[in-house]
Amino acid sequence: MRQRKVASPQQETATLTLGLSPELRDGLKQLSAVRKALRKGGKPVFIQGMVDDAIVNLDQLLKGGRDVAFIPVPRSSEGRTALRVSATAHRIAQKASEAADVKLADYIRTALSHYLRNYAHEVHKEAKAPAHRARKPAGRKV
Image (tube, rainbow, N blue to C red; front, side, top):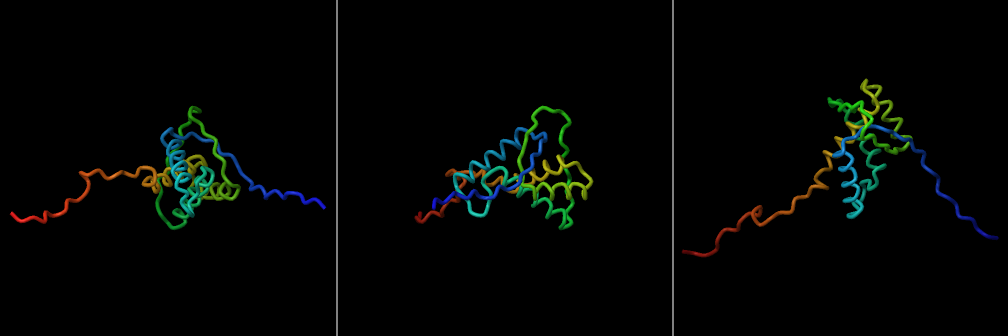
């Protein structure tokens, strides 16, 4: 009897469309590229996973009682970006944005900004030039 391939269960996703600054979009792309090249364990490497992670992280901050200043999304339709998120992350974002009394787009933009700020060191690793290194004490006597 011939065996059929069993497809893995598809994870339900939702699409969010919001205005993101070019710097924020580029930051997500750069972080994804760096993580794909290094394949860091435990951290999402695809943009969808990073967006989900950012939503959950901001929700945990809010539940922990931290004050968060939300970043408003501009009303203009220029620079609109469609992001896919898991259905679970979408529900978390909806509930958290309602609890914080902000628009869903503002919640997502703030979550992404916090996430990129927390992981900026992965993208912007500064190579130490000889001028940055500490000098060794001279071992010779005069």
